[in-house]
Image (cartoon, rainbow, N blue to C red; front, side):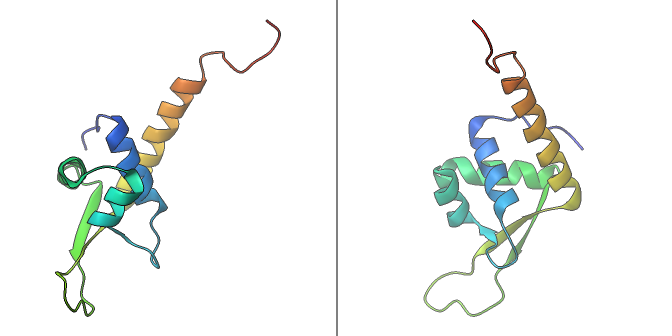
Length: 104
């Protein structure tokens, strides 16, 4: 499974996917809103994550009168683990620079 380049938009999409629940699943427009990104940025990221096996998608099966069915996105077990590790490693790199305060 290939690593994903963690750009700011990719991080925002991963954070949105990690925060999704069964009661509030992640779907295209909800990810765009939560990540504050346009669909031209979000959908290519979702495609790359799918290609690498980090996420799966499924079409909405319930009634959806007056609009097209939504496509729900969910992290796979491996994808959740990889995303969590990648975000934690990034946080450690950003905040592990000895800038924790102290005497100047």
